[in-house]
Structure formats: structure tokens, C-alpha cells
Image (cartoon, rainbow, N blue to C red):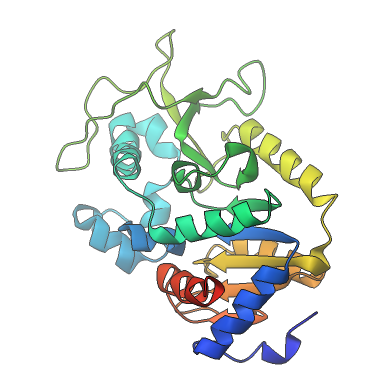
Length: 286
């Protein structure tokens, strides 16, 4: 069943949440898609837009915004700057506890007996930290919890991705990383296995395997009996929104949760992720 008559209507009432809960209950498969807004309720800054970025990093206001800092060139020209920014983020994500919305999604997934998949542009590893199987997560922009050699997209070094767990990055108040910086056993500098802006050196091999697992899972999925629950995916970098809409075009019901840009879903919920999920779950569990 399609809910195209609701495309321009926002859903914030108990009866609206009851419709969404019913759609989730009746679905054979669930797909969770998530952008940066998914982490806001865990206390993470929203980097999509300079206002949120500069609020989190006021010391960088004269040095450029998110796109400037999230650039691999810093690891070449001044590794302490590159690792200052990403080391701070690594430490932040390590110290963050995923909010209750992750638990709600995990419970819905459990009731579908594992018939779900996750597609996210977030590099924070929050879904795995919340208890989801790594085999069910596709991180389209990579993960800060994994490292790679400086340029391993091609050649013998491709696929030499390692866990960031053994590495500690100390960052001072000026967002400068201190020695020792993460290096491999031969002393070569490592960088996060994240797709940055203007990044021709990203090793996509880990994410490629995630895509293959997702594609294999999708071969047995009837999208007309699938609900896509998208949380916090904006339009500035539309990787997640486009994927959600591809599923929608093929018959899936799209629940789009976004406080500012909820338009385009079969159900458009203009709320933050945690609030929306808790409201839907309140009806779902009753």
C-alpha cells in the first residue's frame, strides 16, 4: 500500500503515529537510513552547516568550515591539524552513548527476525555501539573507528584497513594533535578510513563489502512490503535521502523524520529523531 496522498502533509498527531506504527507492524522488512541528525539526541553536534560546526569548534571560525577541515590535504600538509580535528571526533564518538531511539529501532528489527538493514552516512559507529550487528550496517562514508594508509585506493596497500581501537589521539585546546600520531608498524602515517571532501585517497574496500552484503540482502526483499525509516538525513549532502527515495520509488513506504526537511516522505514527521521514534513506539507498544 502506498500513502502518496500524504506526501505534502506532516504527521504529528497520535492518529498519525498510529498509522506509522501500523505500517511498521505490518511490514515484512525494515530499512533504517540515517544522517547526521540521528546523532544530535546523543549529544553530538550537527556538522551539516557552519553554524552547528562553529558552535562545536569555535576555535576554527577563522579557518574555514566543515568542508575545509574534513579534507585529506591536512594529513599531507600538517598531520597534527588533520588528526587534531579527527582525533577530537574519534574521542567524542568513543565517549558518546547512543540515545534511546537506537534501542527502539533495534527492538523493531528484532521483531522482524533480522529482516532489516541499515544505511548511514554517519561515521560514528553508533549503530554497532547500540547493539546492531556489523553485518547489517552499510556506512557509505566509512568509519572513524577504522584507519588506512595515506593513499591506499589503488595498488598493493588497498584493503589494508585496521581498527582504530589500539590508537589514542591526544588533542590540545587549539585542536592540535600531539605526538605520537597513528602510524602502522613501518612508521607510515595512518588516516581515518572516511570519505572526506576532495578525497581521491579513500580506500572504499571495507564499505564496498558492506554494499555487497546489502545488495545480497535486497535480492530477497519485497520493497512493497518494506518500510524505510529515515532519521536526520538532510539535503546538503543527500547521499542518504537519495537512497531512501530509491527504495520509495521501488515501492517501499518512506517515513521521513527531520525537524527542518521532512518533505518527500510518504509520512513526513517534522520532529527530532528521538522524539519521533518515542512517539511512534508509544503507540506501537500499546
